[in-house]
Amino acid sequence: MKTGLEKGREGKEGKEGEGREGKEGREGREGREGKEGREGREGREGKEGREGKEGKQKENINQGENR
Image 1 (cartoon, rainbow, N blue to C red):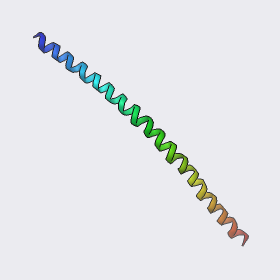
Image 2: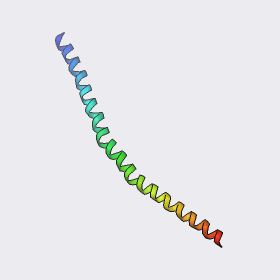
Image 3: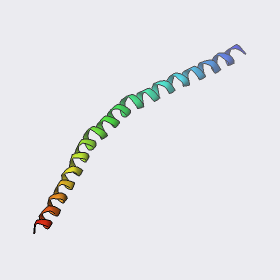
């Protein structure tokens, strides 16, 4: 009877321990790199890229009005 309860407790603790490490590992590595990597690279380039395109469109409109 004792071995069954001990195994049950160890099993639950083992799963909780792995679960916490698993979640922290994924959030810590993928979360930090994923968020910073995507926002940092795509975000900066994306914002600058959009401003660049909008800037060209504004210049084209101004040229059309000047003509």
